[in-house]
Image (cartoon, rainbow, N blue to C red; front, side, top):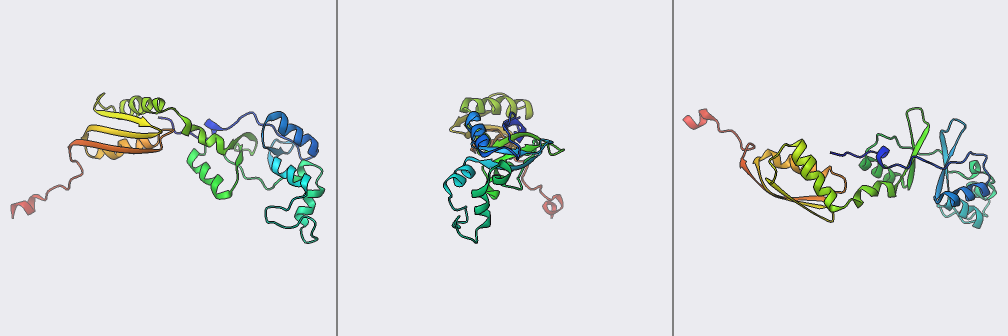
Length: 228
């Protein structure tokens, strides 16, 4: 069964700029590569910041920053610095948040949401940039076709992992919602089937109406009590 990580969905060929790059060079790189932000890296290819289209537009238009301060007001040094910025290093957001290739998709999506960012540079154990992951990348598994999801559940979950008899459980998938019906041997197997199905990429939820032959979750009768 697939358990996707950042390494599975990240973009590996990442356009970057150095901190000394001019803002015109940054704008050209953004346009040439069709991206909305670029990691700023040092000479060791370690990310030290992020510079985005929004940063350039705010700098160009002299707009207030996200805290709503007037860029012309004397008490807004951060904004005035961005208005005076001439290089990527001047304008970039820093320090930069990063992800690791082994992070799971769910924890990475949660991290993006909690930190309020749209993308994360991905670094290896040495801090070297190896990719970049965005919200769009993390949503990609949700776009799997229903028939692909069903095939994985039938062949991988029920067949290879649980070694269940073919046809014992009927599986239908519609818009990512999995419906299970049929019969399993032990009652305890039902929750295992549900959990494994929920871990398949693209599954939104699992509905089941499974029966069972043996209730192995029923409390064992006390023989001493029965003899009284």
